[in-house]
Length: 459
Image (cartoon, rainbow, N blue to C red; front, top):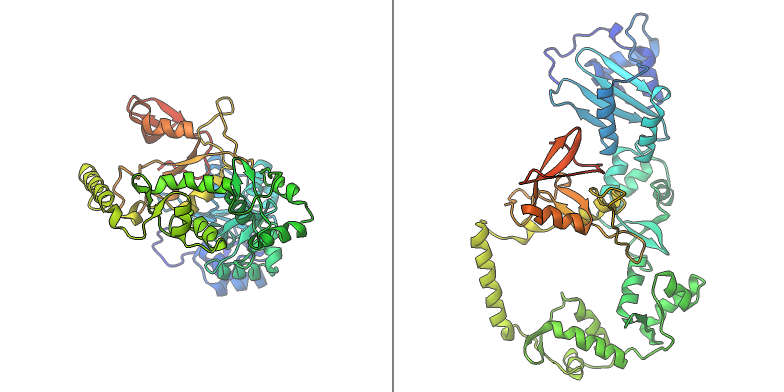
């Protein structure tokens, strides 16, 4: 906002009733209040203590449709401050961190306050849904950086070295213990790196022991941690495995069972580099750790166990030189075809954390599906399977600035709509606004409306 003078106002412009409420109920500082009228903190202090006889009231009892639209967008985007395009007006959302809301908008001439008691119920319901009536900007910053896991299907925050500091800062700011703060944010509690019995680890363990759709669990010592954990959960092994959507075999085979050998023998076919039976895989491949563990249990080397499955394991890359050369040729052709300066993994690497959070924001619902046409794919954990589409395509756009994984370039869609956006009549490359709604448009001027939108902006 531009202002020709530092402060042209007088004491009579400042509403002592409004600033008392802002200061005492909505936790605004003297400096924040002073910024509303370009005055000084000393002036605000004087009015807070002594009041003012003559002033123009800041308090509003209703709000225009235009301002309702702006504030709704702010709520949905979890934004506490917004400046309009002309930079002539500023909008603020304040809360008391306990459920009361205040909307402010001001320009070079006037300040307007709509306090909680005068805010429409429909508007307050949206604020409650988005937690804007209780959360602070620090709460949203922490949630944006945090990961989520679960214990016995109860959601938990995962605190690591990167998020520990802001987690402690946010909990101290609310004068809550860390466990209380996690519950305030809607989680059952929080986990650290020391908490290993989380659902993601349990599911990974069960997946490793599935053969032909059944879980085979041996009495080997390395599985005892699992049995101890099940006992602490006061369930039987069968009940616990069923709880996670798996079925246990009636028979407990040894860890190196014939069924396991068949399973891993079949998986090794994917790693053949020279027919008929020479395989190569590295520690980056998922199968490496499985083969390594089984080999140790049987006091074998990796080479010996792979040989027992009918394959020869190659330690060196010499045997895959021809394959490597072919891959390099393909990469060279792709570089020439798309005329990119370089293909860098960092430049096209998808921000998986952002994508996962975006899916949760939309509760795993397609933004393009209507209730009538929805054909949901439900996973074993009860969540719907959705994908994230890049509006500007990663494969076709040169992304020197690394902007293609920004939130305004992503949309949550079902697999069917994802394919339509890419391929139907050349694909839907453009987004425009029609009758107040964002729509995708293809080269044939056909459109697909974006029915659910919490994050995309019209620009």
